[in-house]
Each structure stands twice: as C-alpha cells, then as structure tokens.
Image (cartoon, rainbow, N blue to C red; front, side):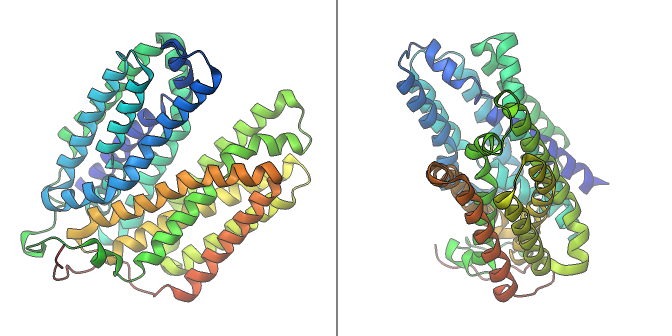
Amino acid sequence: MSWRRNVYVIATTSFVGFTGFTLVMPFLPLYFHELGVEDVGEVALWSGLSLGVTPAMTAMLAPFWGRLADRFGRKIMVERSLVSFIVIMAAMAFVTRPWHIFALRALQGFFAGYGALALTMAAESAPRDRTAYAIGIVQTAQRLGPALGPVIGGTVAGLAGLRNAFLITSCFYVVAVVLVFVMYDERSTRPAVEERPQGAISFRSILAFENFILLMGVVFALQFVDRTFGPILPLYVAQLGTPVERVPMVAGILFSLGAASAAVGNQVSWRLLKHVGPRGLIAASAATAAVGATIYLFAPGTAWLLGATPLLGIAMGAATTGAYTAASSVMPPSARGAGFGLLSTASLIGLAMSPVVAGLLGATSIRAVFLLNVVALAIVAGTVSRLMVVAPLVPARTPVPDEV
C-alpha cells in the first residue's frame, strides 16, 4: 500500500539522518586535537560548544521550517535539509581550524528540522486509524539512530580515519535524499487545495489548539526525564557495587535495553490508543514510568535496574507516541508542519536542559535525580488525567488564519 511505503521510507530516512547526526560524537574531541588544540580544557570546551550548538539552533528554527513546509510542501523541505547535510558533512572533512567545526555545526542546526517534518509526513501518509502506528514507526527510527550513531561513528573513524569519516557520513545523507526523492509519494498525502487557508496560521493560533500547550509540556517532561540517565547511570551502577571493570558493560546494556524497550513502547502505543484513548494512555504510561523510576530510586543492586529499565522504557515510548498522536489530531493539515516544529522545540529544550540539571543534582546525590524523575512523571500523569480534554483521534479542520 502507498501509505505504508511512505511511512517506511520516512522511517528509513529518519534512521539514516539521525544516525549521521550523531556519528561525530565519539571522535569529535580527537578531531579537535588533530586540528592542533592541545589543552584538554580547550578540547572539552570546543567539543561541548560544537555538540550543543546544533540542537540549540534546531530548537529555535524547527517551527519556522515547519511553517515553510506547510506552505510549500514537506518533501521539498526534507530534501532541502538533507542536501545541506551532504555539503556540510563533506566540508567538515576539510576544516583547518576548530572554529570551522563550530561554524559548520551551527549551520547544520540552521538547516535541520527534518525530524519534526518526518513525523508530519508520517501522520499525513497514514489513514486516520493508523496515525499512531505511523508516528510510532518513525519515532522508533529516530530513537534507534542516535543509539547506534556513536558506535557506528567510532568504528568508521577507526577504520577510515577521522577526516574520511565525515565523507562517509555525507554519503549516508546521499542515500537518504535518494530515498525521499525517488520513493516518497507526496501527491497522495498533501492536503487538498480547498482545505488550505489563504494565509498563514499564526503560532499563537496553533498554541490555542485544544490540549496543545499541555502536550508540549508532556513532550518536554518526557524528553527531560529520558535524558537524565546519560550523565549519571555509569556512576550509579558503580555506586551500587558493580566492579569497576564491569561498569561500562553493565551501563551499556542498560542504555541499549532502555532504547530497545522504548522502541517497543512506540510500537504498541497505537494498539493501546484504540482501547484507552490518548488521555488514558499518556496518564497510565507516565504513572507506570514513575513506578520504574521509583525502582531506580530505591534499588539496592543493579539487578533491580535490569528489571526496571524495560518497564520504564516501554512506558516512556508509549507516552511519547501517544502525546504526538494526540497533538496531530487537533492540528489541521495546513498547520501540522509548524505544530510538529513547536513540539520538536519543546523536546529539544528538554534534551538540552536535562544533562545540566542531572549533572548538578548528581554532584550532590545521584538518587536525587531519580526522585526528580518520579515527581516529574507523577505530575505529568496527574495533570493529563485532570486537564486533558478527551477528543477523538481525527484530524482537526482548518481554521480561519490569523494575522502573523
């Protein structure tokens, strides 16, 4: 079926794109050293700035790229982003100064935004009763890409060299562009002309859609909780008595188990939505994730973490897909690009804030981070349960546009 092909093409493109986005992380400090930065502190500074500027720029600009996609089509905007990545990644192989890397990473963030557009394209491709399934497939790809990217990047850099690794990454994006250009059929998914407003729908109008601000808060909170584990989990594993030589292996297993179980949650959410609806799914999943975080909080040993991680991951994945699906149902087709862009901004802000907060709290008490997670998830469950308006999962009609 055409819609399935579209969804699988977008999912594959997202996986390739998100993998390429994270390929440089394992060896970027080494690359700065190769560029002549000798001081460890300077290497850390350049690495941190270069890795942080891309999601920061993406968070600011995703809604605006989404609005352009609403006006001119999603496919051409995704192709625009991927082609820019081909050029930028190839250029990184020829830099001679540390600031060149920083500037190119900033440029990469400027032209990014295809993650939100991919979710929009998936939502528009699928029939109404399969929207959650389509979003879940793409979110799974977007989750697994960053999980595998550092591993693949480190391997490629070791085999081909640091500079050549950027050229190989550029080839990844060539494959992604070809997939979208050749195999994605936008003609069957774009809103009919009569459904499109004559002017642009303002961001203020989008925020006024039923449940939308609440769902932005949910997306932010889920991403925030999800990313708190990165800075502290290896330290917590060691604190629970794991021998030092086994800490990397145990932490790696937990990270992989968390990513895999979250992907399962993305996949099963569309079935659960049929029975409990978006409010029930998000509230129940957040409450279940809070139980998993509570086990982390009081765990006496790492065996407890192995049991809590799948519970936490599946619940987080289901809640995330439920939130995006519920948001999609209240957005008219002509505003979905900008709407998903705003959701992406909320997610990226959570991603940026989470490691900082986790690091500061973890310096005092690692268990305090898990306590914060429990509280945040409980607030999400309670707030959604009380404030979210129950509505059918069908697309909203296009409203009369406001002045921008």
